[in-house]
Image 1 (spheres, rainbow, N blue to C red):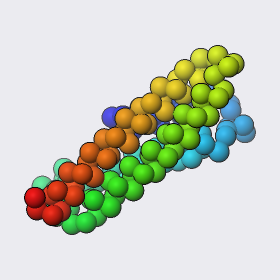
Image 2: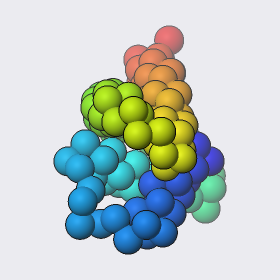
Image 3: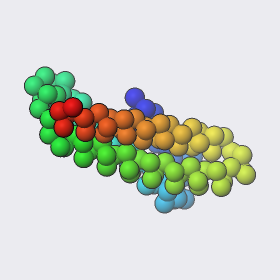
Image 4: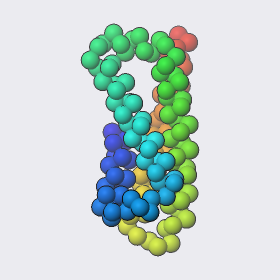
Length: 128
C-alpha cells in the first residue's frame, strides 16, 4: 500500500505539471526504485497468494532475504537523496514540495519495513 502511495504521488505531480523535462536525478531515481519494487513486491505477493506452497518454499530460500535487503538499501538511498533535494528546494514553498516531502518520508518508512522484512527473512532462512 505504501509503495503504491509513493508511486501515485510522484506520478501525479510529474504528469499534472508536465514537469518531465525538468525532473531531477534524485527524483527520477526515487521514482524508478519505487516503481521497480512495487512491481517486484506485487509479483512476490501474488505468487504466494496464488500458490500457498510457494509462500513456504520462498521463505526457506535466500531469495527473499536478498530481495528485501537490496530493497532496503536502494529505497533508503533513494529516499534520503530525494529528501535532501526536497529540503533544499522548500524555499519556494510550492505545494508540490509538501507532497514530495510526504512521499520521501513514506519512502523512509517503506525502507524501514523492508529492513524488518529482511530481518524476518533472515530468521526464517536460518530456521531460528
